[in-house]
Image (cartoon, rainbow, N blue to C red; front, side, top):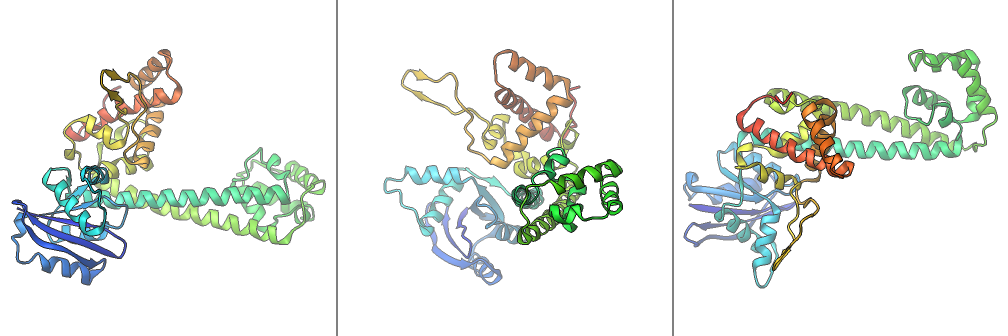
Length: 387
């Protein structure tokens, strides 16, 4: 058997090859993160039996996804390694040396110890899902920042407008009004009929003539400052928010089509949305990587930390939180939804609350139970059935 360790970086990867006997076949060598570099890497392995090659690399954000797809399409066997495993192996060395060349050997050691997850065809789709979920998370973060910025602008220009819309400026009717008339001065000068039509047409009839009159009176008495530069920034902030809305919708439509193609039983869980299902399915990958549900719990970072020394054993500890934060959040969020949509989980949540657990602590217990259910559903490929 030949073990190949690849240390992933943004521009240049490093790799080395070692036999199962511990003989170094190829000393660490570098290759670029592009097509010519990938070809150089593959040509280096031409002298070896492809069936006896196992390539390992760490799960490092998006930097390794290109080479994973490239090598998988060439039918190489690939193992994905949790960085925690390599960090533990690195700490076990006396000198604690860390550089790209040494890391390739540490990755090989992780392979020889079996500390890896084999990449399957399903994992390639899961990589797409993970990428889309990261993209959606980033877009949502940017949209939230734009929304906060919009509110700060309006606090200076027309503070009273938030009161008119009952504390929520992020409505279609508010956006359509502010894109054209973003200051009290321009709003109070609008013809009443035009203002009424803007409010009525963009709120599905919720606002009418009396509301338009009240809005004009608020504009006349507003203490907001007349600042054309802020008014322009309001318009730009709204255009950014609307653009983010469109992009988020495109991302969601794409991973919805991938989930429909995968036909995962996770979607049968009551209250499970496509957004959370995409994160969960993409994070888990091939369920056969996990032999027991406790391993899946640990992968999500929902397992309790262990604090023990001598005869002392802590009875109550916090969750380890050593897995994917996005994965863990989706499980807890889904636990919250399933409590509202399924009696078995609702009873379990209420039991934990009756035992003195806080809301979030009880949700953590529900998330534990949900992980065990998901593990069983995916292992047996069966729909949810706890009603």
